[in-house]
Image (cartoon, rainbow, N blue to C red; front, side):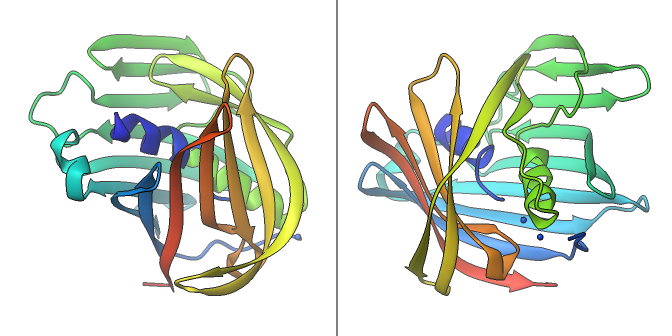
Length: 236
C-alpha cells in the first residue's frame, strides 16, 4: 500500500560539517507512485516541552486515485532527545488515519533499561534496545546531525514495527538540482538493507542543512516512489 511505501521512504529521507544548532522548520513534498501523483507529505521539526527534546512529525495525505486505497492522514510522531551528536528517540507513534487501530504503533524507548516496549499493529513489543537505535522518524534527525558534524554513519539500526533492521548509507555523487522550492547543490546518498531489493536514493541540500529535496525509491531498477520538495520554511 502507498502508506507503507511512504513510511519506508521517510525512514531514509533527510540527511543535515562542525557542530550545528537545531532550528524548527517545515518542509512540504509532492509524492508520486511510479509516474502518477499519489499525495502530499509534510515534515515538521519543533521543540518539545521538555528541554533538550524535539518533536518531529511526518504527515502524508493521498490525492487523486491514491485516495481509493489510502485512508485519512497518515501521521508519524517522534519525541527525540538530543545531546550534542547523540540522538535518542523517547517515544514514537504511528496512526494510519483509519478508524481501526490494528495498523497503529506506539513505542517507548527506555535507554536506562535498554528496552523498547509498546504495541505495533495489535501485537506487543518488548525488544532489547541496541546502540544508536532509531525509529522511522528520528532516523532523519540522526542523519541530519551526523552530516552537519561531518560524521555520516555507514549503517544505522532502525525499529520497524516489532523488528530491528539495519540500513546502509553510501554517498554516490554530487549534483545540482532544480526544485519547486529553488535550485540547490546536493549530495546524493543511497540507502539499502540486506535482504531487500529496494534502493532509496536521496538528494540532500547542504544549503538547507542537508534536507532531502528529492527522493526516489527503486526496486529491481523500477521506480516505485518519489518525493519532490515543494516548499521549505525555516522557523515557522
